[in-house]
Image (cartoon, rainbow, N blue to C red; front, side, top):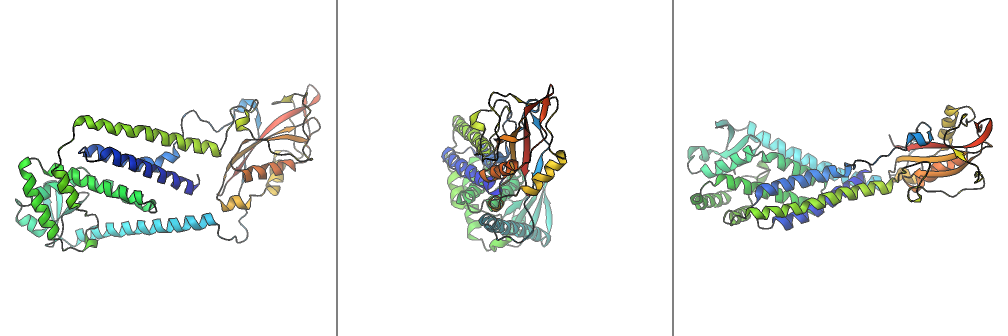
Length: 422
């Protein structure tokens, strides 16, 4: 699949589904459902362009025609070619995404470095990294990073420790890494970064809820959050995954819980998921029309290209056989046919520049005189590739005609030509 087309579909899904998410989750407290929807959006956007609906086949029915072995055509690698616009855009886009990926790796290494340079203590099933005073609490997988005073006065830090334990227990680090990776891949789309922000914020909501088991704990817990925010003296790069969202969290702590009935609104997102899959499949089919039958081909999926005077059409009353007692033979056999096509078929330069490849299926009729005619493209990828395949078929020399009951007859052949970069 064309990589830029894949990225375009990912961007479309992220954008549309994020807008739907914002509309469905406005000011409600169904944080678990929101987490499921956010993770579903990220995973779905990455894989849905690869979906293929069942019952759709790329193969022509083998019993309806004679199909020659597939011929693969690759671009000529000799000589230097100027950088195409596609290659330039893909290079710039990929370069920025790679830099953001390296930035994420550096941030992960800083977390590991913080762990290695500070003592480790056990707190129940969690491991606590004791950091210098002033360090903001945070967690990463099974590590909890706490300042030294938190262990000296555990009673005052109970809510904060429970908050970080919730992050560890619910494995929120996986969500963050997935969101960061998708944001790096889709860096040009501002909605991808807003989606990452919503993901982080919702995880804080979940941890806050887990930390507050009693209504009486709300006020002391909020005071502790304010104290930590005022005492933040740690460098930002030290704790790269610490995002407090203090104002939003305090507002949500005091927000009235939503009714269970309002959960049903999230089901409204399901039709959009289905429409995106169908749209992706329709896009795939429109770029590669297929035929259901080589013997009776509908005009919607069969393209008859213009013919020159060198193409000999069979007379209409004569039947066209799919299989004859003696099949037509190219001078020298199938290997000679492949050699002829390989020497005369050129990969169009514009298709190379546009990174266009795929399988083109051409049907021909070898008439009673051995002439090649009735050229039809029954599976199309691109006009340029179709024309390249039809041009080389037009140049084929005369064949030895097929025979049926001792008489020469018209016989149809199918020739698959696979244009491929590697």
